[in-house]
Every structure is written in C-alpha cells, then in structure tokens.
Length: 283
Image 1 (cartoon, helix red, strand yellow):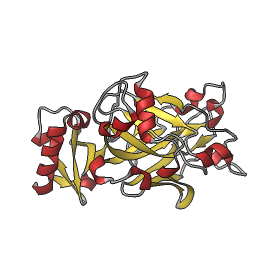
Image 2 (tube, rainbow, N blue to C red):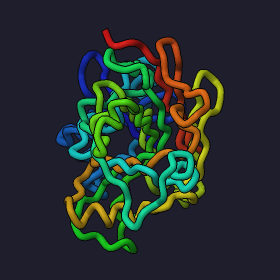
Image 3 (cartoon, helix red, strand yellow):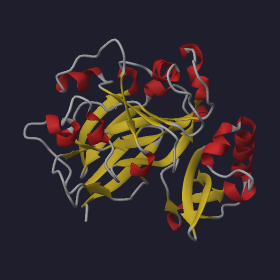
C-alpha cells in the first residue's frame, strides 16, 4: 500500500494512493492524528489496508498538495559513506562503525516542492537515498529483530551544502540547511517489498542519470543500522533512517556539478517510485 500525508482545502490529511486517486484515511480513522500514529498501530494499519482496497476514492492525487510523507518526524538519522563505491570516490574508507549525523525535520520538503540553493553557497549537491520509516518503536533492538520495526520505505534527497559541510570535521551543518531535504512522494509499506536489498536507487539530474546503487551494496545494512542507533536512542513511530547515497555525487565529478536554479533532481527507487524537486535560489 502507498501512503501519503497531504493537504486538501488547507487541512492536513493522510491517505492511501490507489492508482491516480486518493482514499482519505484520516476521515475513516478520525481519532488517529497523523500517518505516524497509523503506522504505530499494526491492527489499525491492517484495517486501513482493508478499507483502502475497496473504498471509493475521495479525490484525484493531482488535486492534493503533498506534504513530506512524515511531515514532522521526531528523528531523521542519516548515514554517511555507506556505499563502498561512494566511500572510494570520497577518498574515505568504511570504518568499524557507521557514520551517523542528523537532519532537522523543519528542513524537509515534499515531492515537487522547490529545493532552495542557499544564499551563502553555490556548492549545492544532490544525494539520492532510500529512507526507512519506523513503525514500531524500541531501544536496544537486536539486528535479527530489527526489520519488525520497519513500517515502510520512501525516497529521500539529502541535498548538501558542500563547503559548509567541510567547515569543520563535524559536517552536520552542511546537511541541514532550510528546504534542502525532500522526502516522498509516498511510503510503500514493508509488506510490499519482499527484500529491500533488491531495490535500486538512481539519482537523475535534468533527465541524465548521475547516481546508481543497489541496496545490496550497503556497507552497513538496515538491520545493523536500526540496531546500532537503538543502543543510543529510542526509535519512535515515524522516525526516519536515511541509508546513505551511492556514488556519482556532484562535487566529486571533474568538473564538479552542483545544483542551480532551473534544475530538476529526481530520486527514483525501484518498487517505490520517483521523488522530484525543482531547484530555485533562496530569496
């Protein structure tokens, strides 16, 4: 099932995408405040799937304004240098532990919303990624149990301001500029993906493929990452785990390729869909 967060008549809603139409689940489950709350209740989620499969659609997908699939996740945990080929192009080695940094929820954008190239930099780069959406919370999760905590998957662009990223050895500042992280267009529930390792991620700039990678190439796989983070932080429903970007990023090209106004960057993931965002300059 494909699930979205969206706005209709200026009201925040959540629903299921059936073809090119939307079934309003927030109307059917009025005591559930948002999509993260639906994902947290497996019984309710099953009811939602059953309802959406036979319900009459409420509107066309083209008639709604999409929000980031989880509009306000409590945590966005990002992983750096998690594809071996990307580590090589970055001149880095995969270490004993994953490289973890955080992004703030207020930086997130929806499908088709414009990415902002910041006033203070022209080194605005793209990073196509698979994002995992947590459904079941928990701490000290064993790797063998970690996939039980996955509600589904979505596309993510962890667009990065490269010069700010390398102001210091802790590069989080370049990873969390306003309106630079896009998430969506929808979440595909975990039961629809038989094996996430078969998924392929592509980053496409103005119709030209820049990045490609398979989830089977991750240095630290999803169960390991969920388990590792859970030793320090408690996962909560709606939290986001961004699994890292494959090789082909702009600033490691010769000459470098950076995002500029008028560009369109797409994250395409097999079995999930395409997240597309134009680029404009920050006012």
